[in-house]
Length: 325
Image 1 (cartoon, rainbow, N blue to C red):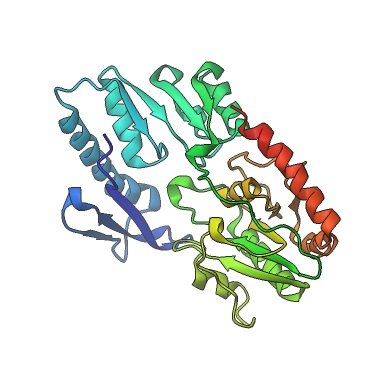
Image 2: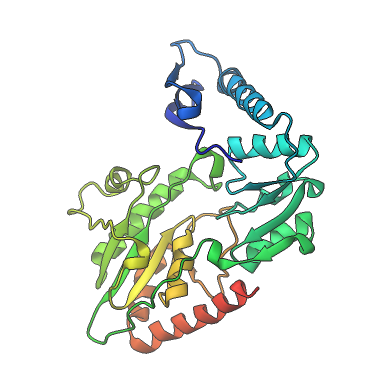
């Protein structure tokens, strides 16, 4: 039922003090040509501008779905990205016609289950049990199923620990957008990135950075420590990395890459200096969550066969429990 990617927003510039912004709307094939909205020099306040610019688009998408569904009796709408404008409006129109939605979250934020009326949700399929618990609390446990294969493909085991080899730390950037944004202090988040990069460059480890095409891009990461030597970016997919003694790492917000790594036998850790409200994938008792100034000593202690394998085993047991159906 979902007609592909209908639209996305790109915020080009936001000035907090003046509450002015430029917004560019990139339309998909269903919408025709590209439209560009630019705030005037004395533009409206942020809240007024969003009502004026986003409001008409919301109405347009709603009417488009309403037209497409006219005369059809859709019993279930499968929604893969329930946090998006398109999926939300599609689900609303299906419910309006007497149907229900089935939700397939990839990495849903913990605040999203509360946004759904349990009467409108048929089922939810999640990757791990801890996320399912939040959905079960909101819509009922009988409607929640766990299936890790929704986001975890079949992959080969990672290389084991090799004595004499350094740790190979793979640092995953985030690709957050406004509709899936974890709540955090951006200023402190940038400082955490800077401290993490500095620590990795000084530690006795090899490290690679998996940048994203939006938000935490190669350019954004490079600006965190502009005087550092060329940073080691990698374009190899996480499931294809075959380095000895690997460790997967995220800063502030977590990534499903940590889960993918644990599934292959790669330990994962998180650097976090600030409180953050996001997907509850990772239990700190199994997946260490460290302050940025603790990272160096932690990696030093981890660089032994016994310590590395002990963390792998602890996380393997956690993974089995979290993905049990």
